[in-house]
Image (tube, rainbow, N blue to C red; front, top):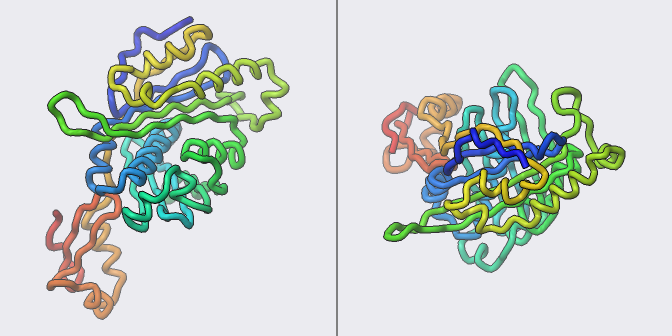
Length: 312
């Protein structure tokens, strides 16, 4: 066992990258506390929807912190079920946001699990490196009983990267304090060719002596329980030591994430400026135009001609 004891114990709202020994098995552990609670408290979703949104936030945090460039990662799950859309994105530097559209509390409460809530549909992962670069997008059907399983299916079909993902979302409270939303996740992937041209596909493992290492690591991740991902007393370092102390685990510096929305009045005003005065008049209610951000729920008010009035 080799554990990086120089790495500080990571706290909430961080992602900890790691590598199993000197192998091609690499992964990330995320713990979301205040950032996720801020996102979900703004929406007051039914619990089932909140759990889906929390899982999506964990996924983009783990995947987004692996980006080697300044850009954005966007996760979308769209289906024909009671939850028609789940969206989460990560912006380089650690900003995450997430939201969902659903058919109402009653429709959601009658269903359980990601597949039942989302129904038949697809998952899309989009990498946006800015206006000067072409966007990359992968799309696969929603498969599996959980959003984590659906993400594994995405990586298998679109990226051909062997992956295991475990996610957990719930509400916990400290003595004398109200319940707050928390989430945790762990992801491992088999990544041969790190530092050069990445090879893809299960056939790479079948030809490599690392096959046993991968299967062992994947089996360990499958044993992770929800309380291990949510309990604030169990740090990411502690969890990784429990899983990989026999094989050795190299733990890297934690990467911070935070809840942050990119909306602003100027951008919305620029969009409104594309409409005619007649179109703008049709948007007026109570003498002004009100625009609410779907992510952070912030309200923006504009005059009938599209001028900025107020932000709440």
